[in-house]
Figure 1 (cartoon, rainbow, N blue to C red):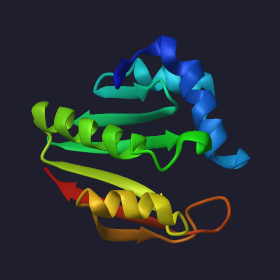
Figure 2 (spheres, rainbow, N blue to C red):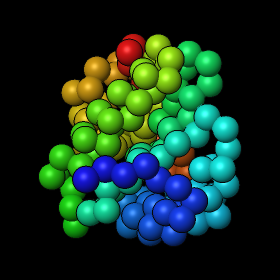
Figure 3 (cartoon, one colour):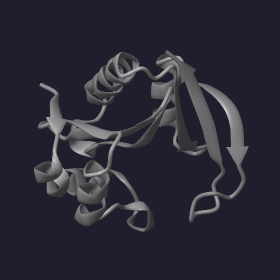
Length: 140
């Protein structure tokens, strides 16, 4: 069951994020609460242990972050969250979604590729571990 995330979900989102990302890349509860309070930002959360955070500006949307707790990965939670986010951003008038993903994150790259995202750019040594960020986009 996917729910619309509010500021009251910030702690749960931070906990999921901390379980799915390395220490230097983890977002704190305050960061999620602040993002969810901004215009154009929305989150979706699956109580089983996943969420997506999106931003919409005019006709463009961005995946700010998506995380699924390791204990529940490979169950379709990420795919369901991304699909629902794409439906909601399209309904809000967005025509394209952008995101950045580590070139080393094969699972995320496979998820995004299956959803129709294609590489449109690269940010060299973008992440703290020195990995490049692939800039991906999908038309809605």
